[in-house]
Length: 549
Image 1 (cartoon, rainbow, N blue to C red):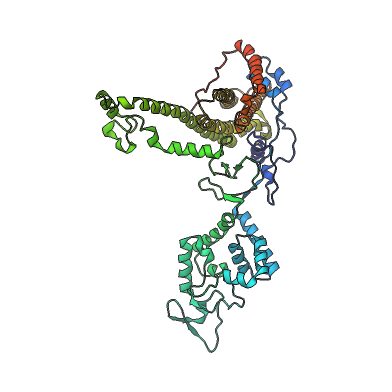
Image 2: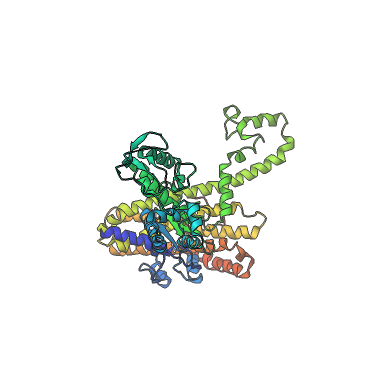
């Protein structure tokens, strides 16, 4: 369907244009994905030049004067490039494995089964297999378990031998039921199947399976195992082989999203580690946590650990262990023991420590509540985005007789909301660990964070209410719809720019606060922004505002 293709194009275009993608680092990789790289470098059809926007918003502008300054004075809007990475499906991994096997087979003139064994032992590195083989073939054969003159895996019926004794069950079986892994030790197919099943059930170690005879090092091939085990075991074995390719590749990892079967191959470079999986999950390549730019992995690790340490949030009250609290003390989050002991004068000497701990807890709660609130808002925005993609776009297309490709500005707005909520969430973890003694940096951080949050709230409100208004009541006029389009696209651009400023500042360690250029910049924004705003609405104080849940 054309509409689905248009929706996919809108989503892909917005991923390329997002402010959070890397813009200053380009890496070379043997395998890169065109889907995550800007190729055209052209302008977006929905891009609105700011000179035109001044006229569009002259009567009732959703942009404030300070917004125009940010857009006009900041560096130009650019299409940023993601660090090269490739999303690998199971089929793509199998194709790579087969290509490697065929390469080794061709160069070394060995069977595909033996080529597979060699590659798994050399972490699927074709050049390593070739180098090791040509430098010491005998040593490689001995280490891996490949016999120079292998025996046949099964024996044909011969006149002088109709039965053979199995080396495991010690019973005689028809010779056509006897199998070997190319060595001189034959076992019945039943014992082989049990041996293979047990190994597969134990995990990926079955990929390095050897002859059941403890004195034999002969390797067991995939071909032999597949001919003996059930379909379920065969599927598990193939799954282990596929996973071995990613597990052995230092440039590849499995997507950490629950239930996701995709892998990511990544070429490191620079300081940006965010990658996007086909399942929609965006995560940090370095630590595998949710993407957390502009916060460093070490800060995220400390923050996640702190959030999980519930005892740290309770001991301040009576200075006793979390495990000692329960219903008898007034509950885990309230403590009547403290009030009783305080009346008895037992805590006078600890009052200073208690007050310090209480203040620390209150500070942590302030940042945690806003961090969690933005996570909830992000999840809700993502759900709303899915609803827009699945139902509302088609409804708007029918209602206004427009192709879905001309409505992608709505998808772009919602994607911007989702990503900005994620960034804003992690800025609260950043703010918590920002030194209280560095007043200048703290004020500068809160100034940038507050501006970004205000812009996001306006965009989020417009995306929610104005889109809904376009779906209800009488069909709006063409002029009304064009005003809605310009308003939403303009707010998307403004929000992107505010968050770009915030991200840049945090990634630079807020060093701009020490320069005169930063001071002049703040002063100019204040002069250009506050005066006109006084006639429109009260100016927001520079502080962290409360988030909508």
